[in-house]
Picture 1: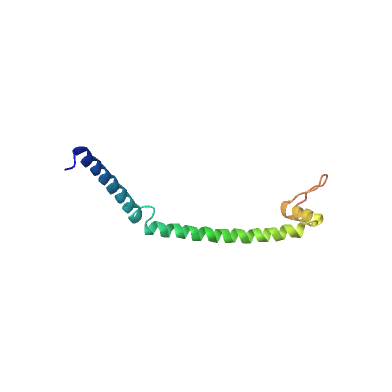
Picture 2: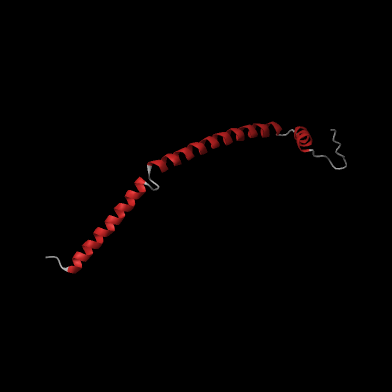
Length: 97
């Protein structure tokens, strides 16, 4: 016959593994590993991938624009004047409405 301390130890292990099993069951059915949560995460990943593609396309366009300005000081100055309203020292900005 098993003495009391061994019974208590076996019961403790059983309760521990029961709690561990119930915890894992909860995670799979309702928690972070559930099908609904996995679908939600996959949807977020898809949305983020779309955003990445858009940003990469925008970066490529900007890289082409930067390359077109390489060594062309007049083009850069013209763009700064027309789009940003920048002026040189001693000039006055006149706006027509």
